[in-house]
Length: 400
Image (cartoon, rainbow, N blue to C red; front, side, top):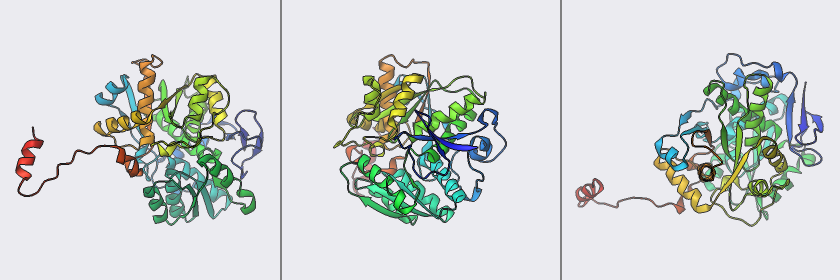
């Protein structure tokens, strides 16, 4: 048996429900009967190995673009020194097919569309999710519609249209208002419109928890730092570990670190101030454009989970984000600015003594640097302009 359950008050709905949120506005998540008895099994893909934890009746391998199985690597001396954490690991989701973590959720959405016999799928995105669902729609022959805000990066729009998606760019006072309006269109069109906090998409994100379980040989990290916007990613990750705990495969849960830009920190601000509800942000600007939901629907659940499970929360100022992006690059990792926030946050938490130097911390590298080239205009570039007459002397200077 499978159903949707609201995350705070336990309201129940059919699994097939179009609306992504409960009638009272709470986030929904999938409940699968018998997860306590679920066990991993052999399989090439992570979704094959953990099929007993997933709600889908059938999963067509031809829908896959080879997502998952991304590296978990030691962060190296440069990043460890910067953060002040000796056991720092990087989960490199930029190696998914469209260079972000969104591909795991998009695959789950395609599985759902196929099971429901839907030939069109729609999503609301600042860019990464739209790029991803466009690619997976193209792969599976399902028409993709993508609603984007007017500030969506050109690089991401180009990728969506190259995959054949129809892109609708919406001018609105802010992204949260746009999202709420577009989600309400499902009723008139009987169209499943997916946001970053939908229950089906988060089923894909929990696969990352199962992958970490495998890579860490069954021992969860102490902390996982996640750039947080619509909340689906952090919720899916934690749901995966909760289900592993329920199945008796792990003995404890990791503590999540909610990370946002200081200029747009509706959840982090609420957690820091000890309040139970999201503190809306509007009319803001941040270089971390991939995490720009200023009033996330379902955000109250994340605040509640932070209180219940002792999660940490931290933000990052604009200058810190750009510095961290540069530090990542100098250590060999070219990440988008939204991803760079996790390094800032962990550094702050370590300096405040809230994370120990010996704690194991996983940073989620959610998107690649080439996903948002406009943000790089704030960075400096070391380029020597030369010519044939001066190339020898310029090389001599470069070698000094």
